[in-house]
Length: 125
Length: 105
Picture 1: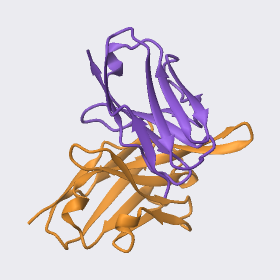
Picture 2: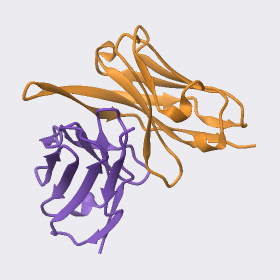
Picture 3: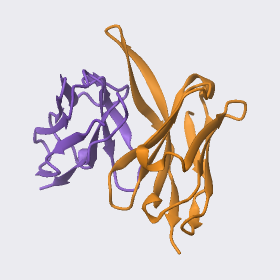
Picture 4: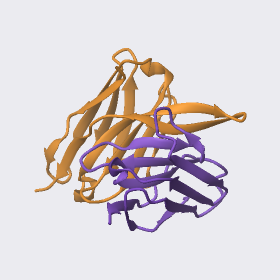
C-alpha cells in the first residue's frame, strides 16, 4: 500500500524549532518530487516547500524562506522539514505529499497524488 | 507571484444538482491547474490534473475545463459524499486558491 506517515509535530514556543518527518512506503520514494503543505486552523491549503528526487533543487514559499529547510534521505525513504524561528502564524497541520508527474499531449504536468494524514504544529507560549 | 481566486467561496446545493466552481489565475498558467477535494479532518485528494485530466479512481461525474487564466470544476450530479471543500492549485509555482465550501441545501 502506498503510504505517507508524518510525525514530529507538537507544541513549541515562539522562536523555537521543530523537525517534522515523513516516512514513505509502498512506492519508489527516490523517483518522486516531494512537498510539504500546511493548513492553519479553519483556513485553506498553503504550499510550503518542494524537493527534487535527488535533493538538488528545493523551493519554498516566501514566508518560510531562511527559517525552514526541506530535506530527504532516499536510503531511509524519508522526507523532513526542519523548522526554526517558529512564529504563531506557523501553527497548522503539516502534510507531506508525493508529486506525481503525468505526460499529457507531450507536456509533463504535476499534482500531489498521495498525502499523509498530517501532523499538528502549535506555536504558542 | 501567481494568485489563484476561486468563486464562489461557498455554495449550497442538493443531491443530484449540477455544480460549477470557478478558478481564476492572475496570469496565464496554460493548463497547469489541479483540483483537490478535502473533507473535514482529512487530507486533500487529487481529482483533476492538467486542467481536465481525471485522476485515476475519481468518478466521471467530476470534470475540469479551461486554460490560460480561467478554469472550472464541474460535478454533473452531486452525490452525498461530494459535500466537501474544493481547492484549485496552479502547478506552475504551486499556489492554491482559497477554497470553495460545498454544503448541502
